[in-house]
Image 1 (cartoon, rainbow, N blue to C red):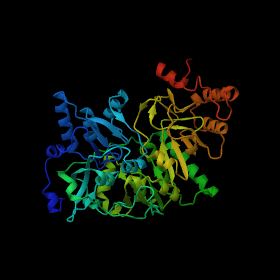
Image 2: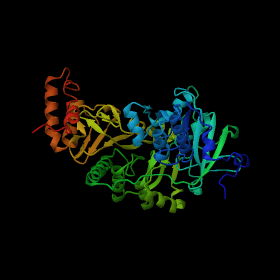
Image 3: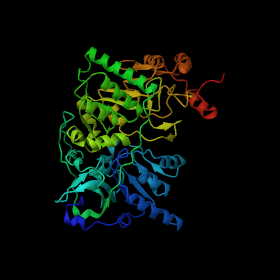
Image 4: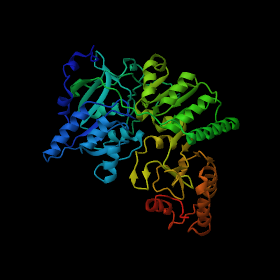
Length: 504
């Protein structure tokens, strides 16, 4: 039975190839998709074929691609391989796109995820020509049932001149009712407070609305989301989790956070899953999450009762986690709310709720500045995502990483980070498998010693102390002492020799 209950929109059903003809060279296209969930699967591939044929004829066919966050090979990979992306924003994790961005053949704007919808409404990004959005179904009166992610889809549907819908029958029908689509945002001077005072508050509708005259094509699909499996937590991840749980226990005993904690935000990956597993093992119950993505570890917490409910903008599940969700959707649908990312990542709401934010990083320096995005200062890895939305506004802002990478040849604690995504002012706690540094209330020189002693790997600790000692003795100023001539020498040595270690 068709998922398209509206008769007028059923008459707009066509092939992916026909729908792709509505996208023109030079268009800006707002596409659904967030961490590999809810992205369009058929039209981008048909569009990539058109782009390839155009390139073979000697014609240029490139577009701007705006999404919620990362997508999958059928979208980012296919369009990048066809050399069809002129500009990409706000976040990506595709290896082909990454290579083209770092080769200088694709433009990329790395944007805080909470800012994208607002910037689009303000017109800062230019005209949005097309919205290409996956949905789970269309109701009889023409409302659109969201898919496994919401992201920026509401904004794309509102502002695009033309709308193409992919109705994916693979997405569970029981997604209906899990979403909370808020239509109360506005630009200054008409902005009102977002009326969320608890993570489980519902303030919107369960569907998108879109003027039917804007919808130029509807494509029926039946294709799974392509979520990659996560690496199992290794010993470093488990050690980080133990330090993290010890820190929360200490904060509870000190009376700085309530026994039931505060709403949790967590990044994605094996360290995050290890931390979530640690929460379950700690015996806590009735917790809440106000975060961007729901990953496998949060399903575990919901099933165990450790987590009472979770609010996010998308799923980010392994294939096994996805199967668990689909099999247990009657249970999970009562405990999960999926919102637009401008609400899931809204600074006002995060600050009001007092979230405990935990995010990964590439490197930290001895004063607490964090690089989340760039390798050796100039090569983008993925993007800042929503980490800045939470770090700047959280009640407690935690960053986690193993102390080394590349088999120990690269220290993740360095004299000075080569790219700053989160300044020292937004970083409260840094945790590695070696231990943690609580930076709250510490002046810069005390922060440096706490980070070196608490977080750096023993192979690099003496080198870091030597740098800090000489900087404190000979820097131009003594507030945040640096030796500018050698602050990046560790990175230069790695690029030249393959290791930050000093030659023996």
